[in-house]
Length: 444
Image 1 (spheres, rainbow, N blue to C red):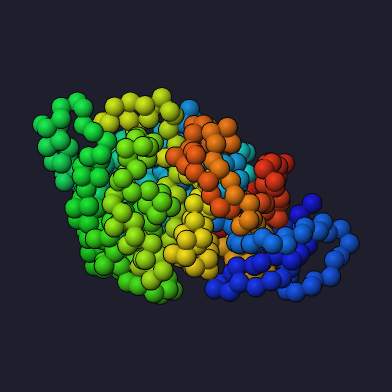
Image 2 (image 1 turned 45 degrees about the vertical axis):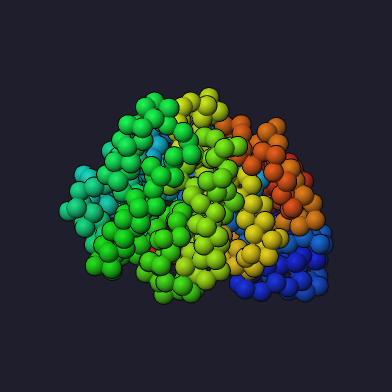
């Protein structure tokens, strides 16, 4: 069932765009070329007029399982991911319980193995008191170590200087950081409470979770990484101010890299008036100038990876007042369509978007046999129809939370098909979950 001959595709891979065919045998890419001859047992798929990309590797999602399944779980969110062309995801540790010991990590792997349509890997979370577990971590068991250097769930804020130094010095896998300075945020919030009481306007969010909070924390992470030679990846860059801290150019050879998220390329603080808490997230969506700078940084290579930070909450939760409404938004189902708008607008080349969503995360995390349309790689493939627009409606949302910040938006493309390990998981608006995803392997 996982043998295919995908014909007449407009293939985008490793800086090239070319017309050709892709043969898939036993779930892996067997050949890439022109006018490949059909073989017995292969199913043929005519991709004429459509773009064939390596499936997205989303290096930052919160799928909410275990402990927060009323918002989302591995079943629902992995299917939303497949519908969005995301073939592999790396899931964050701030669930309940947190993924900060080996047992919790093993539990997530077991759960995903029974439920996830997409391929999966998990971060191991850092706390102020699990340094020895981090030092002993099998490098193949987790995609990275996640450090919240800003406020987070439970005990996952790491603010002990000795612990931070130990993690940056001894981590056996890449260190990824959420960089916002908590004392700065708390001081900003206190000032807003003094002015507005319990009625802080949402529009103050980017001034509470301020650019100063971001850049102060990002500088600290980079200073530690340079001191100890750490492989550091800074997540969800949201400000123009931080970009000068990162080197431009290709990801190869870099020890310090940066990621931004698709919502920072799409929204600006001008959208708070219409979208409200639906686009409240941490770090905050900031100004139009920041958005423009992030788009330019994708092209220059100061931003190495484009991800989602998919973080669903219920509409009831989002309907609360500013301070009570949780931060985060569901994004995996429409991430590639949203990213492709930057290509339609002539802002970012298609080849660059493929690099940032597939090739770069594969390189950064040493992913084995994924992220490229190459012979021998797993057939994780996404077929884009650039001539079939889609208007996002609530009834089309697959995520358990049941809403999207993109509702009412018309994207100029649609996801025609998604193959995961050669399995046609999404085609013409329908899911096939008869074959589940695999645990992502790392060459370490």
